[in-house]
Length: 243
Ligand SMILES: Cc1cc2nc3c(=O)[nH]c(=O)nc-3n(C[C@H](O)[C@H](O)[C@H](O)COP(=O)(O)O)c2cc1C
Image: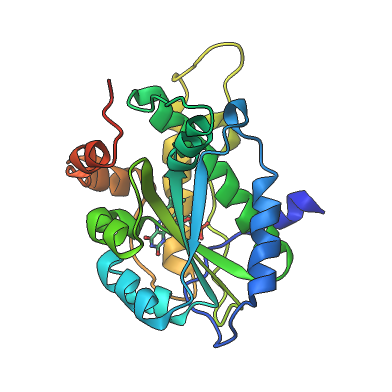
């Protein structure tokens, strides 16, 4: 049942030595491509890092060496307007992806593509973990992967046979995220307190990396100051100028 599979997701950060074959990666990517795509632009590419030296550099640049080196497959997901530029050039035309909307379209497209791949991989018994750490050093990663103008690395994903399976993390109550007819924040304090209790119990009792923490305070700690403030300039350098 697809819903049971979705609800059993837990990121996997430790894999056996088994590598995914090229055929398996191609099968997963093909499933990913069947995600919906805004205006059918298919504005994404994925780099499959098979060379050990490239994987090592990705681990170093993203500050995730353990995950990149140990994974059965290492993928870097990019929003991609370069191929669309090539499509337009076939008609002696050029495209404009300098506006913020283009970046949103590429970001949404690549996320849907990636999540389809994640579900396809999990349906075959693999574990996955997204690696936003790719944006810790997007310029060096872009140089390493020879990403052209119009292509930005958004996140990575490791896939492999799980060596260690984590407990499923409880999500926010449905009542915190589902609104009827209009946005309603009136129950937030109540549901967020309830969720803090749930998460504190989860963190205290999970089998590894136990800690004493609620969710709301962790979010306050994380979001109090801006993350990766260099991203705007990096995106501009890759051609996304936010005009
Ligand atoms: C875009 C994105 C980037 C992420 N980056 C990382 C990462 O760099 N390292 C990591 O260990 N987990 C990363 N994660 C995994 C999240 O920490 C994880 O999904 C979240 O804590 C929920 O846990 P679960 O996936 O086990 O349910 C990322 C997830 C997403 C969606």
